[in-house]
Length: 260
Length: 182
Image (cartoon, one colour):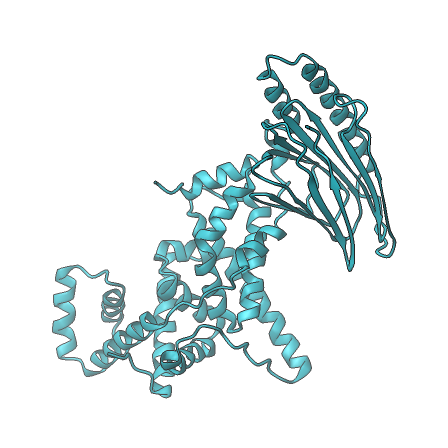
């Protein structure tokens, strides 16, 4: 039986917490106590054995998988730099084009209405994964106040619209989805022509967003809307390649972002 | 370049910057995954537990007490998840009257693999409350104060339980003839 005080000294030694005086005391007491000496030696061995066990590499995609699962929008609604603010700020920097202000105001009003409408929809829409169709409606007649490009899709019960808007050197894409099952959307673009500057997400808990240069990936399990803004300094029509997937059904399209 | 503090990243995340959380995931995924692996001894289950722990951490980020370290908090979450999982697995295994084989772990050094496996086996034979202490103290290197926070028990209790866990592990290692290599 090893007395409590000696037991503590031995364990503190393993933790490296003994003072020099305590270490000296431990040495003295171990010399005269075989049981304690063996216990100490066993703990030293155990400590060395554990130190020699190497970590195992986690799965390569672990971080990616975690980020896909987190409800990224949970805290985002508090951010003051919303899309409207982004648009307004961007357009304020444009000295030459007055219509941009009109577009900004129109866009802000439109988004406000959109948010109200989406908020009233709540989570009541349902998804029935087995029907898909898609149409593209292009409207470039009114470059400032109308969408540059527009698509609608109905994919296994997941329906939605995609619109792009553009003015001078700014482009925006508005994605709206009505679903209550898993939907994955990827938006590829030429990041040399379009610089992704911001994303506004409706307050949905079951969404994850990944952004990489030239790629935005959105996974949602509920209805929601996403507004992505881009700088288009070159003013060229650099398209967005969009893919919407639910189950095995895929809807793909290309959206113009305006420009020449 | 100075790496941002955990507390700054948490604040940034709460302001809507999910990218800040990704930095925390990158920073701690390896430690959390290995803690989970040593608790449940199955690669795929450890991956799932790690993922669940980080997702729960994100969802509960507002409840994080900045007086504690973020990594202590995430350890607390993953350990609780692991304990709950082990309870579930024990019931599940009892119902199926069989024990699931541990998933093969990739990238284990062949020469050290056998000894590592024996050490892991010895750790796994400890009672869960003892296993937690060995994992958090000897692998995660948490202080006694941090252990007390993670396990929600007084430091004095941590010490007495850890001493007992060490003794139990020594017996198991001795039985398996595992000694430290040179």
